[in-house]
Image (cartoon, rainbow, N blue to C red):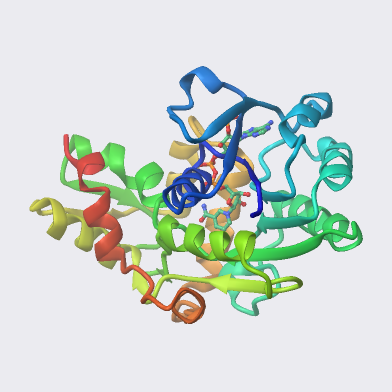
Length: 284
Ligand SMILES: NC(=O)c1ccc[n+]([C@@H]2O[C@H](COP(=O)([O-])OP(=O)(O)OC[C@H]3O[C@@H](n4cnc5c(N)ncnc54)[C@H](OP(=O)(O)O)[C@@H]3O)[C@@H](O)[C@H]2O)c1
């Protein structure tokens, strides 16, 4: 039986991977920088580790043969961290992005993309058995983007109200991750994962409104206004990355795949399913 270390275990996708592995009765170790506040309970084993400090990885990797990797550390840490991982593990599943999909939403240059490409190149030449997950927009972005405004009122100030995407439920990304972590037959696979429907920002907010029983609408603001407001709280790279992606994708239907259903045997969750699962986080 594979013994899995989840790096990024407290994040939106990693937490689902941990819980799906544990629910299946599989041994799982969760790595976090803050075990005391991680919220995991037995049988999940929790260990302190930081990708930025490779000396902390050795203990986390002891007895591990399979890794789920979410990268959230400075670029300079890529080589030392992957060297440590390669010394211990046999298989890695990396949470990447649709870097090779010819849709404008996924093809705008940005600094994070450069880091992800560097990680992929290192993994490909590491000798590890690898699988790359390439999800499009996460449905859970809606929590960061809109939940504070929705908790405070009925208007969401947002740019590009009509740009479509196919938001994917974190449960579906995790379900594919668990297959790739635990089954044979996924080595060298690059799975482009999306939700089942193309929905504009307007349609996504309308779906949340339906679920929480409120009348919400987007008040469209200019990209410059949005940039100015967001730069108070979000990193400039993330803000510019989103604006470039949305500007390029306006007027094009979202890229939709059926990979989740084909691999898991169950239909991908809709945005309505996702909003229902997270309704409490939008209520005041
Ligand atoms: N959002 C999207 O639409 C989208 C689409 C495609 C791909 N992606 C990719 O998805 C990834 C983010 O996944 P997510 O949303 O699940 O993550 P997340 O919720 O942002 O969580 C980040 C995780 O990284 C961990 N972390 C942060 N710094 C760390 C460090 N120095 N060493 C070890 N762990 C560290 C955090 O753990 P602790 O704080 O507990 O240590 C946390 O578990 C990114 O690589 C992004 O490019 C996102």
